[in-house]
Length: 331
Length: 62
Ligand code: SF4
Ligand SMILES: [Zn+2]
Ligand SMILES: [Zn+2]
Image (tube, rainbow over all chains, first blue to last red; front, side, top):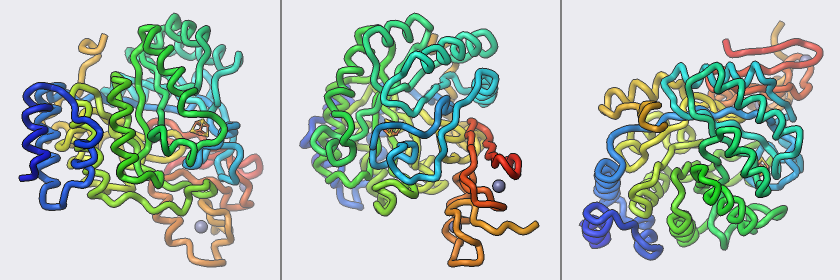
């Protein structure tokens, strides 16, 4: 077995201390014959430090498309000739989406908007939407509305938003290749304000944007230094009309290496399977990930693309004897 | 009525090969109206989607 896995067993599994950047890189480049052992160890780490429960979440797009930013992977940027049109959900549709999510047994419902940051209209819609959901559905509400001001952070916390998602997307050194309309540091600032407000920090990114494997290690180390409550792991699903439309889909083995490496970097963090798992890893990939360090899933559809049916994930969790985390455990 | 336009890429179905589009559509809602190729207003919800054309009405999952 590779030395790195011996070291990780002592440091991460036994002591709960995540790997540093150079060790993460070793896991990201582990030979094929050691990959199964790496995933097995990542799974043991997850079971030891997080337990068998899986946190289930649904997401919905409150405002789709027409974003002024230019994140090169995103079909919702208004700057590319993507076929995604701008559209808003109304409050009854938002409540319906929360109900559909709760019906799957999910405890988290994340409201997402394609914006640089919220304007007064969006904050007003959020206030009404969160109140209507809390009235009608038993579920935790999270939000992802781009970069925030301190006032907006305070307002969201006061509305009862318990977790805020803002992805760094990729490592600091590669970020300028992917986004030119704002900086990695601006994203970091929002994350700092969110953390100080007491809301839980949810921050992850996308693997397979064309970053080098060294940069993937850099990204995992930077996320670990932020110590978010949750890390959503996406794999690029190249979208028509975006600058990354011809970027090849990540090789399945590299996606699995990333899952193991991110778990070994962050033993105690919720690591969530997010977009792109179906296209990158196929139907069997969900099982491999859940047995390789992942302990949370987005069920059902994504923001502009579709996921496999929620029932398929829930049946799999049952088969793997991984209970869905209950609402009482999160309140 | 048989669709004239590919609902994923917006090109005439009679032109070119849309096998990849059909495969991709398993995990995507339609984007172009199959009758007039207008870009549709698409809403994706956790367990469904709807796509509407001002001229030809609303599509939803079969
Ligand atoms: S800020 Fe968000 S919605 Fe806007 S282009 Fe970037 S990723 Fe897409
Ligand atoms: Zn087509
Ligand atoms: Zn039409």
